[in-house]
Image (cartoon, rainbow, N blue to C red; front, side):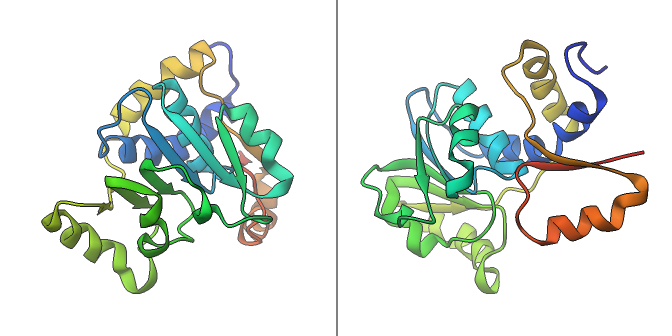
Length: 203
């Protein structure tokens, strides 16, 4: 059932990004106080990840564009890096995990941000599908690793997000809503790569 404090648009927008983010977290043994960098923190997945991490007491550095810094701070990020004005890989922090929620980085450029046994995860396959191969090879060497989790077990994800929606600790980031007649416009907007959070089509 949808919690009383949210509407159906919010409920609809709450699951896709959160489901993926939860499956990523299930593959990383994070402890309170650990540090995670989230690249692409204004997307559906990234914005969900920031909130889920903060709920676990994780220190979060979020990477986003200039226009969205305030939105990301409102999600709870401890530090925000603007990729439009600086190179996020020049950050001096060392992270237990670097999560690329938009698939625009690589393990090669991010591994210097990781602690010796840190984990890199991307939402995309990477150039030439490299993240699949790295996820098989890097664990063999005992150092920094790549993992490539698949989003499974939607029921478990719902059981995690539902109480967070009810108590207000998770709020889906919604950019725009469209009617079913505006589906073409909604997809066109999504393809522009400018959306912040989720786009919802109402039936």
